[in-house]
Image (tube, rainbow, N blue to C red; front, side, top):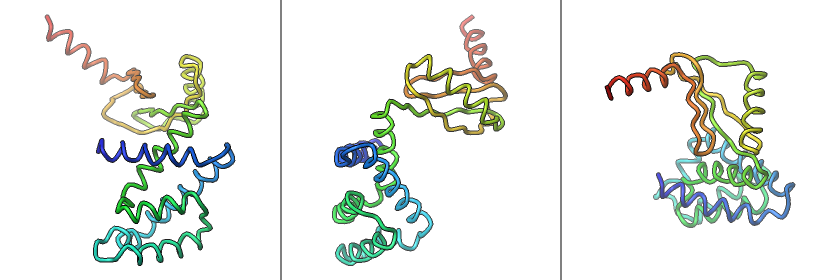
Length: 181
């Protein structure tokens, strides 16, 4: 997994470098997202692109036709053809994810995850994002995930920082303190 992530970072950094300005980054982000979602919705096509039985030239002809219909231009088109030629098309999802991380880093935005036992309202998530943004001096965006094992409270993971305000976290801390005695 670490190799795949490292490889994805190299491709995504190169893709960021090809976009001249913020409008170019937005276009690449949109096109990359479109292709990833399309491939998710068409598992047969993805299987063909991953198949060692189908030759590379046939895959390129197929994907060029698909990209034309999806109105995907360079540099995303070049990236996908390169991935097919180097037999790395299975890394496209990871490349898209690391590309978004790179773009956000360039824009001064840090992404994080918010774990709660139940889904909370967008207004509360917004207040938490604002508070974290002020504390970290960066714009923070949170993706909310429901995690019933927390029992109650919240757990936030932003970059390398984890803020555990969950009941499970407190119970674990209490258990560790008792075990030390």
